[in-house]
Image 1 (tube, rainbow, N blue to C red):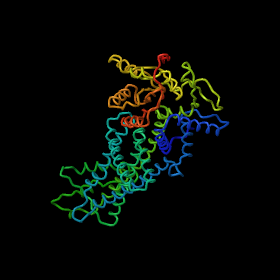
Image 2 (cartoon, rainbow, N blue to C red; image 1 turned 60 degrees about the vertical axis):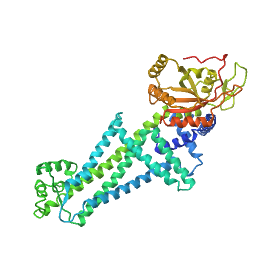
Image 3 (cartoon, rainbow, N blue to C red; image 1 turned 90 degrees about the horizontal axis):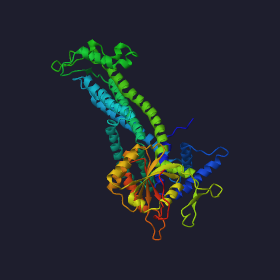
Image 4 (cartoon, helix red, strand yellow; image 1 turned 120 degrees about the horizontal axis):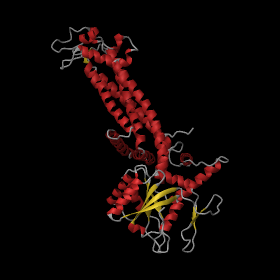
Length: 532
């Protein structure tokens, strides 16, 4: 049985991936390959893992053991999970206090005008049910893939979390530098998780909301029971609209269905005669009303708060936990196969290190794999196919042979080559081809010059590519550096790469990633890459 993923592991994974974003791929390849070899040796004589989930878990476990940042005794993921648990306790307490204050204020009875039952129901029961109906409809539409209604709710959650992060950041400036660094890191992971795993954020926030409402309804119950126990509270009903006692009786009968079979009828809801006897007419006052009729409402009101407030919210917390776990496993499995950072990680773990061999023009740029014993092997067969997308002018300025070899070193292959920048008809054909292609086990590679600052046109083009290939297809932006004066390949400048990364982050596209390519200028004698 596969071990289920946890939020602590997801948080840890985001933390380590974020820490590796600006590191050189060669350095990362050496580190991750050594991790894979060390883990494989430790598992002998058992075979080395090959499945993506197993590989990532082993890598994550090794990275957690070698983590040097604070706190040293627990992972970043566990720290965030414990912080969220503390937040849930805090929200529970806040809800409890608000419920106590609201009920005690509403049930203030001076002995002249009874507490209006209809006001109580509309304020504390019906309003909750109406809001809950909207949220549940939104969740249902979200599960069925329709995003018309969930978007405003998710946006509300996003605005609340942004406000909380901003306030927490401002408060964190007063903390010591070490604690401020840890807090900033945790908040950054949460914000990245929201943009990368949007579905994973919905259910925890929903559960936190219901936790707050559990505290609120418990406060209402406790305060209402307290007021009834220590004081003589009279309950009645009145309305400008001419509502009959029979209609009120049928309404309370319907509302009491969840508990009517558990308790005697006298406590389940007021009788028709008691409802008629507790009707308030302002010009007549309350002195003619019987006490038994005025106090007949309190069991019904307590049961309403218990079943439609407290117990219902507890049930929603359980349901949210079930959907949260299921969504966590589905999202984790999907991200392991489609997210570019994961693809890079799997390739780095499984691909042996590669050494460059200098030689004449016929063998220049060829690279041989080095196996675990240090002996040279033939070129590796790339594992992950990419559709290469080149601008017409860029295709004339880079060595396609070197590009192919560089991609092989990283564990990729070019399955097809397309060009951009031609006429309108050519661009339309390219877009149609991208839309009609199957992207189940392949991705898209867009080559860009790192020294060209990404402008809005570049971002718009990437958005159009995303629409053409679908939301789950990995898109890689391959940055090439300026050629050296002697014609040799150079890697992109770190500052240029950082600018590109910041610009692409504004797209909030979890299936978009950058990696650097060291590609020499083109040579007329080089062999071109053929479409396959």
